[in-house]
Image 1 (tube, rainbow, N blue to C red):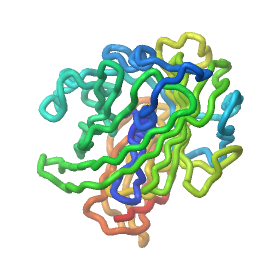
Image 2: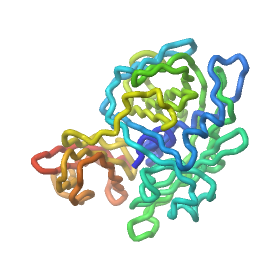
Image 3: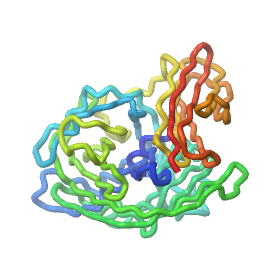
Length: 367
């Protein structure tokens, strides 16, 4: 699934009810409540934004899977140089843009002309559903069509923004998110709502360096005032986006501890020479995201050759609680969603076994 937009587009803290992406999720869509200014050093138009997410087009993405601990986020103001050229990230994957009318599981839940993304119409996982206006973009919610299905609806719609977007403006919004998770049999497993308060500020501008390219960018600070974290999003006219999630206790500049980093690049951006979608060379099991979580989280893993893969869940005493993967897998990068709705809060473990490879990770369920 397209995890990157979980972090770009769904920027809510997992400790109060699986409110975080993301992908893809997000987060990015919460940065756009901004207004234009003719004196701004960088300006990004709606057409430039739409070109990245037009149905039928693709984009590439990668995310840190929490493998990074410290990243230099630069500083406010400008002009600045935001240099991520030496940050080591996993290989890039490809995602497709779809109208809701082309995703059968979403047709009855969102307007047909709304847009989402995924590896296929059957692999839309924790990604935003949004819609374009004449000069604005709105997030309607977030959808996962794989089992267990999960759908969020935002009331009022989350304002992505009013374009063009420029340096120096801020925007705040409060909304209520309604979240419903369905069991494999199609019955409602859980349903709840929560309030979200966001303050978005375009607080920096300058040059973005990544993958051997240099382009102008805006830095947007997204402060989740009620959720205990904040994000720094780097946005360009050419279609490069970087989203870095940071604990609220960290500073707004320099090298800081991070929770997550995602990079998204439009397929129309041809200057990026070294984006690769290579298959993995070794087995790998990544830390789940989000973590802590409630009640769902995503686990990523890599398989370098055709193998039988199992991933099982255990409690603190080593008792096996369930199996979330048990099948033959060809070489590739994979993600799987795990819903712990039937478990109580606590520390658990998940273990991957493939060939001679065995890896165990700890994760925390907070309800």
